[in-house]
Picture 1 (cartoon, rainbow, N blue to C red):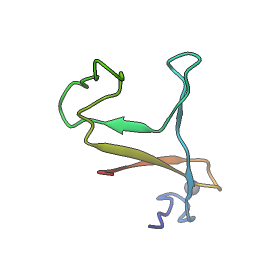
Picture 2 (picture 1 turned 60 degrees about the vertical axis):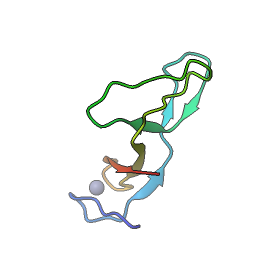
Picture 3 (picture 1 turned 120 degrees about the vertical axis):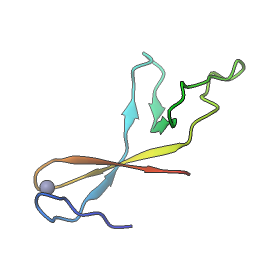
Length: 72
Ligand SMILES: [Zn+2]
C-alpha cells in the first residue's frame, strides 16, 4: 500500500524501526496493545497480548516519519 506525505504529497518510503532500548539486545519493530498493559511471557520475555505491529514510513523530501498500525 502506497502512502503519501500530508505536507509534500511525496510518496513515502517504508523504513525499519529499530528498538535498542534494551541495551546490547537489538529488537526490530514496534508492537502495540489496545488499552491494556503489556503482558510478558514468563518463558520468552516476549509480549503476549500485542494487538499488532507498527510500521514506519519516511518522506524523502521533508524527512517526516509516519507510523501505521496493522494487525499482522
Ligand atoms: Zn514530506
